Length: 454
Image (cartoon, rainbow, N blue to C red; front, top):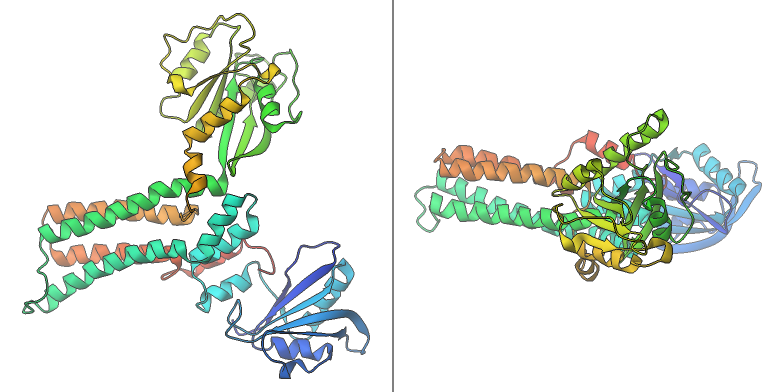
């Protein structure tokens, strides 16, 4: 934390401009040593200066613009210098080399953001928002990341922790100063509604955070069905390109074929799987096995049936197993005579879409079914302030389990000091979400996923 770090902040490759970022107490001094132009150590904060970078032989390396930003009004709350050099690989690497020769250390992935956290400028949810911002590919993902970076998600957790600290404080006053008449005496009638309110708040955040995961990670969608029912044609129709090979030969698709589309700003990660049937072909059998595994892992199953083909016992069994999964039954080839009887199979009629993929019939209806199934219209219209990282959601789920245990302890009249300890543990656990409490190993693992220069 006391050394000066540097890294290339822009994408590697040829471009008009490259930015090399330097952060640390000695950043201005180090850059000034290789800068030919104004004395940067006398420059005002948040100013830009034109000049040239020179090596130890006073040879000019490149014509540059240097931005000076002095602590604490910077991203890391340390002195930061950003060097704008020409964007070729050679000048960019040479500038980085000069900085390393003059006392900088190459930054680790995410180290600038890690310093911003450790110096108190941002918390962990805001840091995760920075990474999500970099990786955002849809407008909704960008909005979600913006709300995290602006602290809106942190506010959800801080409100929860405030509610809990009030309960803890109330209990402590009761135990330490029982003679105070103006303090509520903590009884079950008082504690249970307070704990119930915290539990309901956690449940609400977890419920809405499903939307956050959908926005951030997209919907893993598996296309399932027998050979030649139109699975690959459906993938191609949704992608509007010939991604998968389409033939009349059964078993053409032996491994998964993937594609990606956006519906209402939500990514759909679509997987075309091998046709499900009994086969002696070892490779095809492996593909069928993988198809069944994908069916269990998917967020959405598009189960394709051939309108011109009777349903086999094997497919009927799979249809019956859909149960609580998110699924849509696609009855394809409706332009052909029907041989399908769905009356004895328990499927929800509003999950059925009749299509003729070859004639491009039913595609828009299918998309609308997906929108309705995942409440995409509501997600699209609502300001996205959700927990979206698996880490945060896991901590909150554990907190919910523990708060339910506290609720049970109160009802069983356990000693109030034991209940207070359990509530404090939950309060500390929630602090791990925004970094109020943290472990060094967590920081190292989390920031290692960042790119260099951020």
